[in-house]
Each structure stands twice: as C-alpha cells, then as structure tokens.
Image 1 (tube, rainbow, N blue to C red):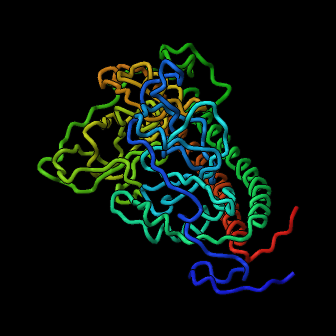
Image 2 (image 1 turned 180 degrees about the horizontal axis):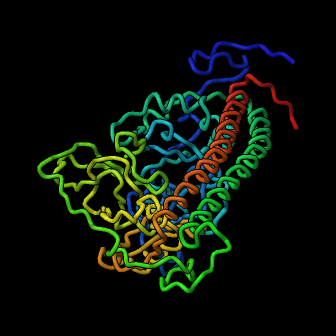
Amino acid sequence: MERKMKNSSIPWIGQIPEHWKIVRLKNIGSFYGGLTGKAGDDFSVNEENDNYALFIPFTNIFNNEKINYKQLAKVKVGSDEKQNEVSFGDILFLMSSEDSEGIGKSSVYLLQLEDPIYLNSFCKGLHVNNDSADSSYVNYYMSCAAGHEYTKTYANGFIRINLRQEMLSKCPLLMPPLEEQETIAAHLDKKCGEIDELIEVEQQMISELESYRQAVITEAVTHGLNPDTRMVESDCDWFASHPSHWRTEKIRNLFVKRTEKNNPIRTKERLSLSIDKGITLYADKTTNLDRFKDDFTQYQLAHPNDIVLNSMNMIVGAVGKSAYFGCVSPVYYVIYSKDANVNMDFYGYLLNTPIIRDVYHKLGQGIYAIERGDGRVNTCRLKVDYYEFSQIKVPVPPVEEQNTIVSFLKEKEYEIDELVKVKQEKIETLKQYRQSLIFEAVTGKHIISQE
C-alpha cells in the first residue's frame, strides 16, 4: 500500500506521510525539573517521614529507553518541589551527559508505585496532557535519530554536555493521528521486545564468558596448570590449598613500594586506571570520570612493568600492570620487584582475582560501598592501608612455572576476548537494527498495519 508523502523540511527526517502534522514538543505537555538535593539516608516514605521520597539517579535512568528501577535512592523533598512528582506516562529526559550520544536520551515512565517518585536535577520530565499524543509513541520518536539528532545539535558544553529546557521544548515532533500513534507504539513494543530479548541473551553469554575468565585465572594462579599436582594446605587465609612445591610470602617480601614523585616534572604522560581495562593512557579515555589537575608535580611516577592499585577501589578490581612510563594519582599504590624470580604479569593477575578482593574488602576502612549485584561493588570509599596490604600472604610458584602460567592465561584471554568481541558485535548490530526499525516507523517510512 502506497501513501502520499511530503517534505518535512527537517534535514535528518526527509519525507513524511502527507497527513502527518509537525508540532513542537512543548505543544503536547508541560515540563518540570528534577530535584537538586542529594540522596539521603534510607528512610521509609510514610506519614512520619513524608519529606523523603524515591529518587531516580540520572546514572541509572536509561537502558534501551527503559528505566532501571532496581537502583532507586531516597532524597529529601522540599515542600516547593513536590509538584515535580513523576506521573505515569511522563517522558523523562537526560539533560546533562558526558557525551553527545547520552544527551537528550528519553524514557517513558510506565510503573505504578505507591510512593511518590522524583528525578535527579540532571533530568527533565514532560507530562503529556495533549489528548492527541500517545506517550509511548513520543518516547520512541525522541529515543531514535528523529528526536536525538535535534537534541545533539542544540546541546553544548566542554566537560559535560548540557541541553537547555528551552531548546528541548522546541524540538519538532511528527504527529500522526492518535490511532496511528498507538498502532506504531504497539508494533514497536512487540518488535523491540523481541530484539531486547536477543540482546539480553548475548549479554548473558558475555557475562558467562567473563565469569569463566575469572575462574580460569583464579585456578591457574592459586593451583597451577597441572591437575595431578599434589596439593598441601595453604597458610594464606584467602584460599585453601596450593601445589606442594610452591611457597608463600608476604607481599612486602616480594615487592617494593615506589615513592617517586613527579617533582621536578619528568613526564606529562598521564595514566588512567580502570576496572575494565587496567592501566591505559589518559589521552585515550572516552569519559571524564577521573579528571587530572594541571599541576603535574602532585602526581607520582609509574614505570613499565609496575603494578598499580587504587587504594580506594582495589576491592572492585582497580588493579593493573602498566606498560607505560607516566604519572598516576597520589591515592594509588605503585609496586615493583627487584627479584628475578617474580613475574609481574603473574602477580598482575593474582592481585586482581575475586578471592583476593575479598581480603581487600575486609581490610578496607571507610564509610560505605554500594552493591552492583553479581557479587560486585561500586562507588566504594573503602581505603586499604598499604601496610595491611603488604602483610597479605601470596603464593610463589617457581619463576619458570609463573612464566608458563602467564603464557597460558594470555592465550586463554585472547580466546575469550575474541568470543566476547563477536558477542559485542552482535549486540551492536541488534541495537542498530532496533534504532533503524524505530526511525522508519516514527517517520512514516514503514507502513504499519494494526496487529
């Protein structure tokens, strides 16, 4: 079935059905802001404590245009802010992001809760009160290139990209008749749901591969590669046994803490330590989460083959072996070994195993940590004292065996990385298909019959 088309005069949209209208986003509802307060204590929302309410942190709000309701915080609400409560069917927008791809991301609120719920100050809500607009359709429109190209164009900023409400409200919105909007939304709910299930399967496979990676590494660095080796009880209190020909030593007997300051300045190569990638060049980072100060003399030096540990985040895996000469944060520990019988790659693996992270957690001194699920912890402020760290006993295989284990693990990691890469490429292809499917539907280029 063919239908007449017309020029939308919107460069990234092109032709649209002749009977569709174009309105501004502000014409279908009213905008409201998020709260400026920070998450408070874990108060219950009740008559005795009615100044506290559920709060959607901006970092957890969007995942394939769906709200993550698993990590709602509590926030104190002033009497003048209670009119900003999120309502069923409201469309929520991220107004501040570290990159242009995140800016203007939208999500539709479709959950009924007894407790009131509010947004973070980085977000805006749109209460749809136009009887000619369907919230789900509008959200699909804003979540794909049809709306996102506009929000990226009018956002600006350096450290953070920001979008002003005034500009968002002027975003052009294609408006089919209401019945057609509902048909499009229902079609996309079905098709996108199927795609999301496929993406979830691939993500689960990646998770299983990462768990397998950790299991292989842990087994190799604590028990070796020969399953027939005789085991003896370990005097390391964080694992039960090790090969009988291995010895154990305290970390302080194997490594030296590097204390070289970058003063006078010897390098301006800044190094970044992340949980996922270990030590990388700061210049290669795509986010600004750990910003360096301009004064390079405040930092300490790390050399190639050094192991670097973030004293505040060791418990979540912020440990890595450096391949570079550069400067790192003064809250990091930098260690090296003068012993020819120590393979730094071996201990780079060992000092970042899940079971030794449990030891770090017990040694950690601080205020709090937030569980991410699956045994992972995030946003930690549990500092591990270097002296306590240096007292941890670790296994010491013969250096030839350390070398063999490292070679095995590097080969195994390469195999796992290749499998993960294939899964990630499948996910990216599915996401791109999902976006194109939405765009074709909400711009009228694909005719959708009632299902």
